[in-house]
Length: 277
Image (cartoon, rainbow, N blue to C red; front, side, top):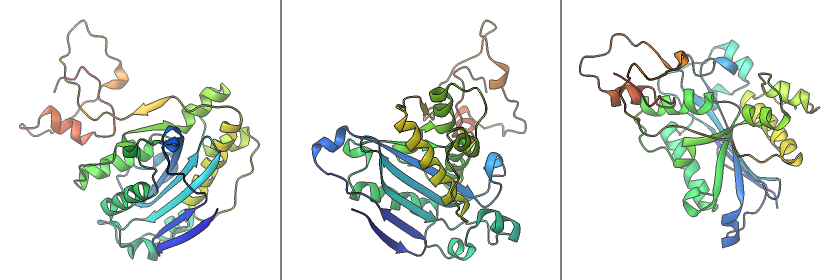
């Protein structure tokens, strides 16, 4: 059964299949494709300018049935941005009026989606196997988690702390070492891009096409990426071998700054066990 309902002008829910609520449903696997855009840079640079999230889409797929269960789209009202320039609006295809008139800030948007999962028996707290799938690490590690810290959102639901990286899964499935994006993945799979003016909606639909093709080709999503919830404390010694890519130099830290303060600042990124602050 397919049904569509708009909860408000800034939250749209499309239910495309019934979800069984019996105990057999608890053994099923659901993939939740997740895409956000911010009020700043897009594509590979998203999150690097620390702009706020203004649109967020979750698309849930029943892996066993290979069908889309629901699409949940939200416009999120920013706190520190009051205008989107014409160049950005043209590239993103976003309706600025819907963004700035949204009744949802980021915390409210997250709560609302969490309630939706409970109402439709799709929440991991109910024993459901639901895992996020992101195009890359930016959506969670560089956008959602850092912004949550800045806005004192302390209780992100558990499903935002792990995810499947679609690029890694694609490389593992098709044995390619190239650095892929959604367009190159579509091209390799001989899938035609869809025509959609809204940037966020277009890319989540492209992800959907890619995931379905991977499932049809027999892929199992198993390489789970986890975001650290706690700092693993330790002290560096001369015998420890630490890769250069894991070391940063931070200047200007307050004298009373603790290792936990540093970990909070970098939330979303994994900090190596041996850290000397």
